[in-house]
Image (cartoon, rainbow, N blue to C red):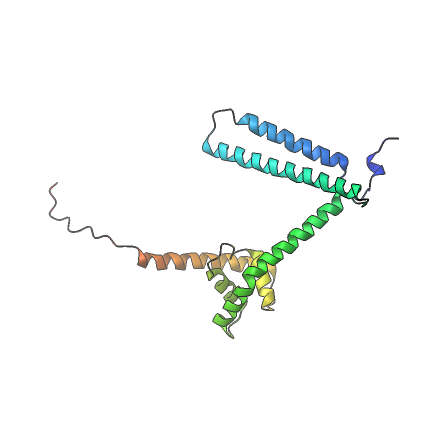
Length: 195
Protein backbone atom coordinates (compact mmCIF):
# COMPACT_ATOMS: atom_id res chain seq x y z
CA UNK A 1 0.00 0.00 0.00
CA UNK A 2 1.46 3.34 -1.05
CA UNK A 3 0.95 6.65 0.67
CA UNK A 4 -0.64 9.33 -1.41
CA UNK A 5 -1.07 12.97 -0.70
CA UNK A 6 -4.69 12.33 0.29
CA UNK A 7 -3.64 9.73 2.86
CA UNK A 8 -1.85 12.49 4.69
CA UNK A 9 -3.55 15.30 6.59
CA UNK A 10 -5.30 17.29 3.84
CA UNK A 11 -5.16 20.47 5.94
CA UNK A 12 -1.37 20.41 6.05
CA UNK A 13 0.28 23.08 3.94
CA UNK A 14 3.51 21.09 3.89
CA UNK A 15 3.72 17.34 3.58
CA UNK A 16 6.67 14.99 3.01
CA UNK A 17 6.54 15.51 -0.76
CA UNK A 18 6.39 19.31 -0.64
CA UNK A 19 9.19 19.45 1.95
CA UNK A 20 11.36 17.35 -0.36
CA UNK A 21 10.31 19.55 -3.31
CA UNK A 22 11.34 22.65 -1.34
CA UNK A 23 14.69 21.09 -0.46
CA UNK A 24 15.30 20.16 -4.10
CA UNK A 25 14.36 23.67 -5.24
CA UNK A 26 16.80 25.41 -2.87
CA UNK A 27 19.56 22.86 -3.52
CA UNK A 28 19.15 23.49 -7.25
CA UNK A 29 19.17 27.27 -6.73
CA UNK A 30 22.29 26.94 -4.58
CA UNK A 31 24.06 24.88 -7.28
CA UNK A 32 23.09 27.41 -9.98
CA UNK A 33 24.28 30.29 -7.83
CA UNK A 34 27.61 28.65 -7.08
CA UNK A 35 28.13 27.80 -10.77
CA UNK A 36 27.43 31.38 -11.83
CA UNK A 37 30.21 32.60 -9.55
CA UNK A 38 32.84 31.20 -11.94
CA UNK A 39 32.24 33.96 -14.52
CA UNK A 40 33.73 37.46 -14.64
CA UNK A 41 31.30 39.36 -12.40
CA UNK A 42 30.78 42.87 -11.08
CA UNK A 43 30.88 43.57 -7.36
CA UNK A 44 27.07 43.86 -7.33
CA UNK A 45 26.73 40.43 -8.91
CA UNK A 46 29.20 38.97 -6.41
CA UNK A 47 27.19 40.50 -3.54
CA UNK A 48 24.01 39.01 -5.01
CA UNK A 49 25.66 35.57 -5.27
CA UNK A 50 26.86 35.77 -1.67
CA UNK A 51 23.45 36.80 -0.31
CA UNK A 52 21.59 34.19 -2.41
CA UNK A 53 24.03 31.48 -1.30
CA UNK A 54 23.62 32.44 2.34
CA UNK A 55 19.82 32.55 2.02
CA UNK A 56 19.70 29.11 0.36
CA UNK A 57 21.99 27.60 3.00
CA UNK A 58 19.86 29.05 5.82
CA UNK A 59 16.62 27.82 4.27
CA UNK A 60 18.08 24.35 3.70
CA UNK A 61 19.28 24.25 7.32
CA UNK A 62 15.81 25.31 8.47
CA UNK A 63 14.08 22.67 6.33
CA UNK A 64 16.47 20.03 7.65
CA UNK A 65 15.73 21.08 11.24
CA UNK A 66 12.00 21.10 10.52
CA UNK A 67 12.24 17.54 9.21
CA UNK A 68 14.27 16.46 12.29
CA UNK A 69 11.70 17.99 14.66
CA UNK A 70 8.91 16.21 12.80
CA UNK A 71 10.78 12.89 13.04
CA UNK A 72 11.53 13.49 16.74
CA UNK A 73 7.83 14.05 17.41
CA UNK A 74 7.03 10.83 15.53
CA UNK A 75 9.62 8.95 17.60
CA UNK A 76 8.03 10.30 20.81
CA UNK A 77 4.59 9.21 19.61
CA UNK A 78 3.35 12.76 19.06
CA UNK A 79 1.10 12.90 16.02
CA UNK A 80 1.62 16.18 14.22
CA UNK A 81 2.37 17.66 10.82
CA UNK A 82 4.71 20.29 9.40
CA UNK A 83 2.01 22.94 9.46
CA UNK A 84 1.52 22.60 13.23
CA UNK A 85 5.28 22.74 13.82
CA UNK A 86 5.58 25.87 11.66
CA UNK A 87 2.70 27.45 13.58
CA UNK A 88 4.53 26.79 16.85
CA UNK A 89 7.69 28.37 15.37
CA UNK A 90 5.68 31.41 14.24
CA UNK A 91 4.15 31.82 17.70
CA UNK A 92 7.58 31.62 19.36
CA UNK A 93 9.07 34.13 16.93
CA UNK A 94 6.17 36.52 17.48
CA UNK A 95 6.53 36.19 21.26
CA UNK A 96 10.27 36.92 21.04
CA UNK A 97 9.64 39.94 18.81
CA UNK A 98 7.12 41.34 21.31
CA UNK A 99 9.60 40.85 24.15
CA UNK A 100 12.30 42.67 22.18
CA UNK A 101 9.85 45.48 21.33
CA UNK A 102 9.01 45.87 25.02
CA UNK A 103 12.70 46.32 25.82
CA UNK A 104 12.60 49.38 23.58
CA UNK A 105 9.05 50.61 24.19
CA UNK A 106 8.84 50.58 27.99
CA UNK A 107 11.73 53.05 28.49
CA UNK A 108 10.62 55.03 25.42
CA UNK A 109 7.08 55.33 26.84
CA UNK A 110 8.44 56.65 30.16
CA UNK A 111 10.80 59.11 28.46
CA UNK A 112 8.16 60.42 26.05
CA UNK A 113 5.56 60.71 28.84
CA UNK A 114 7.94 62.90 30.85
CA UNK A 115 8.89 65.05 27.87
CA UNK A 116 5.37 65.64 26.60
CA UNK A 117 3.46 65.87 29.86
CA UNK A 118 -0.14 66.68 28.88
CA UNK A 119 0.73 67.39 25.23
CA UNK A 120 0.36 63.76 24.15
CA UNK A 121 -0.82 63.51 20.55
CA UNK A 122 -0.10 60.97 17.85
CA UNK A 123 2.20 63.39 16.04
CA UNK A 124 4.09 64.42 19.18
CA UNK A 125 4.56 60.82 20.36
CA UNK A 126 5.89 59.70 16.97
CA UNK A 127 8.16 62.73 16.67
CA UNK A 128 9.63 62.21 20.16
CA UNK A 129 10.09 58.49 19.50
CA UNK A 130 11.92 59.22 16.26
CA UNK A 131 14.31 61.51 18.16
CA UNK A 132 15.45 58.63 20.38
CA UNK A 133 18.78 57.36 19.01
CA UNK A 134 17.86 53.75 18.25
CA UNK A 135 18.09 52.07 14.88
CA UNK A 136 14.41 51.09 14.61
CA UNK A 137 12.58 54.27 15.57
CA UNK A 138 10.80 54.51 12.21
CA UNK A 139 9.52 50.91 12.40
CA UNK A 140 5.74 51.12 11.95
CA UNK A 141 5.06 48.07 14.14
CA UNK A 142 7.02 49.64 16.99
CA UNK A 143 5.29 52.99 16.56
CA UNK A 144 1.85 51.39 16.56
CA UNK A 145 2.64 49.43 19.72
CA UNK A 146 3.88 52.66 21.32
CA UNK A 147 0.67 54.49 20.36
CA UNK A 148 -1.25 51.60 21.93
CA UNK A 149 0.71 52.10 25.17
CA UNK A 150 -0.47 55.73 25.16
CA UNK A 151 -4.06 54.55 24.43
CA UNK A 152 -4.22 56.75 21.34
CA UNK A 153 -6.70 56.02 18.56
CA UNK A 154 -5.29 55.94 15.04
CA UNK A 155 -5.61 54.48 11.59
CA UNK A 156 -2.56 52.50 10.48
CA UNK A 157 -2.44 54.13 7.05
CA UNK A 158 -2.48 57.57 8.66
CA UNK A 159 0.32 56.58 11.04
CA UNK A 160 2.42 55.32 8.12
CA UNK A 161 1.97 58.60 6.19
CA UNK A 162 2.62 60.74 9.27
CA UNK A 163 5.74 58.72 10.09
CA UNK A 164 7.16 59.34 6.61
CA UNK A 165 6.43 63.08 6.86
CA UNK A 166 7.98 63.36 10.33
CA UNK A 167 11.00 61.30 9.30
CA UNK A 168 11.71 63.70 6.44
CA UNK A 169 11.16 66.74 8.70
CA UNK A 170 13.58 65.38 11.31
CA UNK A 171 16.20 64.58 8.67
CA UNK A 172 16.00 68.17 7.41
CA UNK A 173 16.17 69.55 10.97
CA UNK A 174 19.24 67.41 11.73
CA UNK A 175 20.86 68.47 8.48
CA UNK A 176 20.20 72.12 9.28
CA UNK A 177 21.64 71.72 12.80
CA UNK A 178 24.73 70.00 11.47
CA UNK A 179 25.40 72.89 9.09
CA UNK A 180 26.23 75.05 12.09
CA UNK A 181 28.64 72.48 13.54
CA UNK A 182 30.74 71.95 10.45
CA UNK A 183 34.22 73.38 10.79
CA UNK A 184 34.47 76.47 8.64
CA UNK A 185 37.66 76.73 6.66
CA UNK A 186 38.99 80.17 5.85
CA UNK A 187 40.45 80.30 2.39
CA UNK A 188 42.01 83.72 2.84
CA UNK A 189 42.32 86.56 0.41
CA UNK A 190 42.83 85.50 -3.18
CA UNK A 191 43.02 89.02 -4.64
CA UNK A 192 46.80 89.08 -4.56
CA UNK A 193 47.43 85.73 -6.24
CA UNK A 194 49.67 85.80 -9.29
CA UNK A 195 48.06 84.08 -12.19
